[in-house]
Image (cartoon, rainbow, N blue to C red; front, side):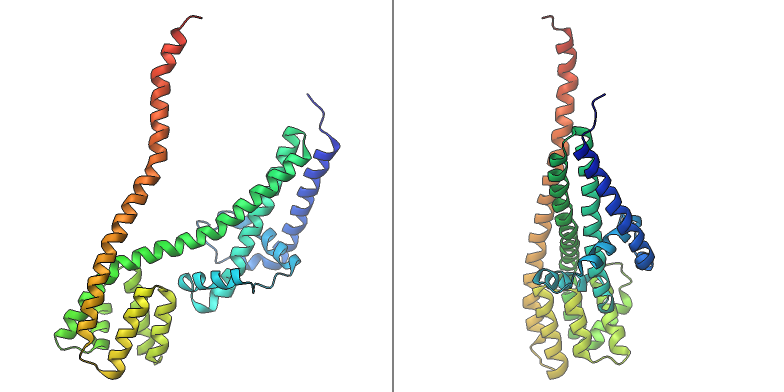
Length: 292
């Protein structure tokens, strides 16, 4: 068995010591932060005290342009009072993945007896995992936008029908939220808006909440039409809604087509693996039977 160089051993020991120190500090100070987290969204939840301790050690201020961009994403997924909490949670998640990646780099340095290779792999893998942490947040919001966009044409049609039957806009929205016992995101958010209005929240503020939770150009346009009608009682709302409804149906068809194409693309790689396995099964007996 080959001897392990001092450099590789030192690199691994340093990584383990740093990880252990940050874990103990984070566990004492940030353990309660882990309680509301779902392990489905945060699979390394039990190790995340490390990430919280790292961010505290770095004294990170969470005020860069990158942070402001991600705050907008988090506002769509979380209630306003929890946005800052989850901003820190996601950074802790990224830092935890980075520390785990450095640990894997240490293992590589031991296996290859090359501390430089281990360090390069650890740093590279850290960057990749940090990137995918924030990309995962963006993908979640994009999936949410697709789900909302698929339901918006139906919502607009319901508003047009109910207002055409004599209800005012607010009454139509209230009826839709009462009768739509749905798990669909759009109707859940609309129901929350109506609850805010019933509780005395100003209409503008309630629909601002909807705009933040469904931060899409189509939703902002729909909200503008609704608010104009509520305050001005304009008779041209039906025409405006029919126009945006037609655009939304067209956009829904395009979205459905794009989702189908993306699903086909995602299936391509597994199908290629299956084809490769079939080719191996067919060729392997012939190769074994050949005599050289």
